[in-house]
Length: 529
Picture 1: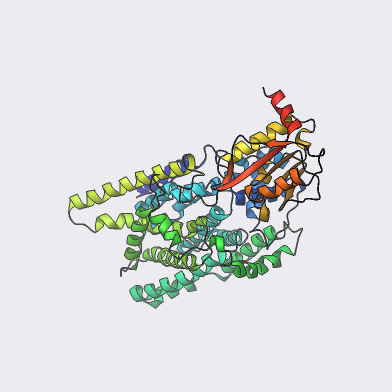
Picture 2: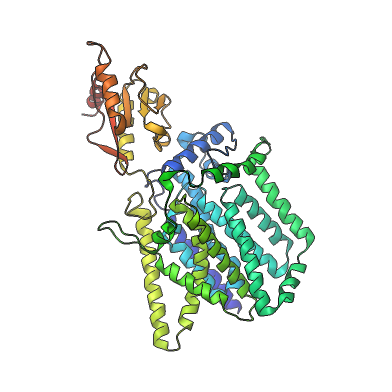
């Protein structure tokens, strides 16, 4: 038994290393998503000024910002200009990888093989791998949520004070990460209730009540205190901004009022499931995590079987938790694809058990072998998709998890701006204007963070002087032409030439233009013959 447990632990550790191999390389390759850039600029204020104030209107919880201080300090970065994409994205990479290793928490309850399966599927799931490289809160939230489940399960086994406190810490981290933690809490509560109903059916009410009575009051208090302390620590900006704590509660009013009111992100109820089941754009490769969906369904059915096995309580809890999470996220009209990993991880845990149950359904050896072979083929396909998602289609709309994402033209755009600026005597102090309706110029503030004299505009201001260098959305090109060539009186019209060699896109089908004064362009060409 000890050897088997050791093998399972080693396997999970190997899966963790595989997860790291899929997540860590080339973190600077993909252009920063607009949301990533927003968080990065917010982090810059914390890094440079030691200033953070929770903003319940525009931002999520503070854990992402504060935890990013660790890699920033380790890399000796004191200014935002010294921070790289690696510095930022290593944070979700860490928690996405830790999530795989934490599967070991469930070894006694799920069983060795099911836990090993779950660890492997977490490591190679394309969605889990892709969003582990995204500088947003989602992967942190999934990891902290699983910390609550894992530590909570461990506490039920031995009523240890440490597990109770750890569970409380993870609860606090969930709350300090993102408002959607309340969905997970609600799903957990419902899952506990329905697990109790099945336990009463199979084992009698007394068995379950005995476990409840075994709870120690001081452990419950410790968990609550730990949760409250951790949450307050982050929201109060480490006890420097008391208003952040009540604001973290008032944030739910804003969150609920916004849900379903942004038409850009309104999708049908089956949006997430469709992305996971099958996706193909044109002649590009098809994407599917159907293996996980099928195995999760098998795991769910297995969990509901009437068996006098106390360990089924954990699987049943996960089954109901995942079901309610999937239902709620599907019913919320506002959908962005990274939100699906919150219930996908539950599906993966169920899939680990389903991969054990399916071969057992067949009595014939050939059928069992065939089922295992098909699952191995599916595992290989998931791994290949994870590689494609992270390294070949990382900004391509052919990837189902790429959503409203900047394309590689951003790098071309920024490189030309830098070349022009370095040809000017002012260098990084060169005045430039970035113009886009509705402030839809992200992630440019991240890429232009080294420039100290950038004007950010929502519209063309005809009363202000034109900058030597202008980059703008193609939507306002007529207004720019009017300002540059129609409004100035004859003899006072400095000539502007195109900044870019051709049309560039910020995002697919979202074109941008660049304009540079002719004298500056000539200076640039002279220095770059």
